[in-house]
Length: 449
Image (cartoon, rainbow, N blue to C red; front, side):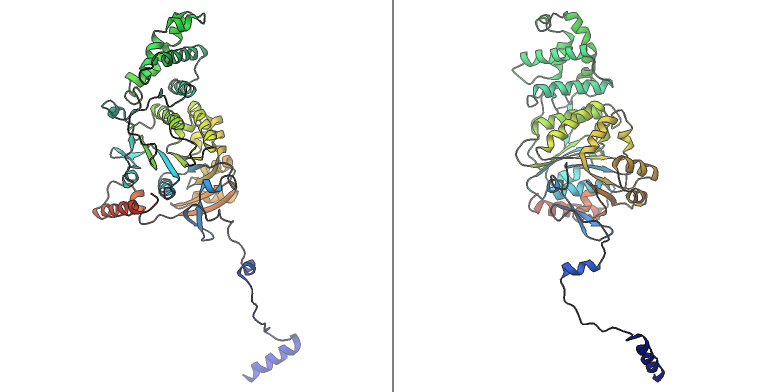
């Protein structure tokens, strides 16, 4: 002990005191925060719906395109990417459920996936007391749901544009000038002569097969030539009336579609997702919604499309949706496109149109992808190198979020109330079914839904 004191005294004599005694300093948290170096980029604010938690900082992650639009976002549209089984579906569903807590929000979902005869959004629709709109050729023949491409709610220009798109998607090429003329003449004749009911596709087909003499002779065109020009068009449209797609589009629009419901689900799960029917169906639904659903009434609308590559990968359908996105921004529309791989769209036939739509998506969420796919995604989306390197290592439920250059790694959090509605495994236990029932009752009792 004496030796230690002697050492301390010698050290103090040679070098000064070993320890410096300082008086306590009073400061504010604003000043003291400079002591701790930042570990993550700033968040997006605290206004909107909570998604989960930032992985590196532990802060809550809040996102809302309507709150950020015009300030941090040039457009409210959103692209979700990732391999199956990593959490895309769970994110979409909880996001919609949380958005619907705001009374001025409304959502349309094109549900292209499902099992056991129903779409995977069916549980959520039922929990909210809403019946999904099932588009099924077999059911439509027995009085099921129909959507009329010639619905009077759609403008003349919109109807003609939609008819052209249906034909071009089915043919896989653009409509030739003479065939386009025959279609335009038939459409004009039907609109002028069918006034006591909704015009339907059968009226267009009949006119194409037997052109009205007065409507074409006045233009100095031989009716027989017009008939030959429109024959291929009639054959394509005939598929929607008498072919494998008959029943869904060959009659007046069905009554009972509630366009004021907070959630509208179009169940497309009965349509072969790899057939030409899917992009045709999405085009018809998209244009029909554009003219009947999107209105300048200050409501914020979300249009969520699963299997969105059916839209983006078709030049003709992509052009329709590109116009819808531009138009929708002025009326409070957020378009959410969900795809598995970016290569599904950027390397397809509609690369130009796909690039234009991707540029409108200022928010991009990327779940786990293989290294090669992650590098390709990073090049197309302009992601930072560190984000590209981390994408192949992401666990389910964790994604890279790029909100107009603000890049974060976010863990999605699902509540106990949401869990039984989000995971739609039909092989549920009795306990899980009971849990789902409790969740539905709690959700229905909450205000704002």
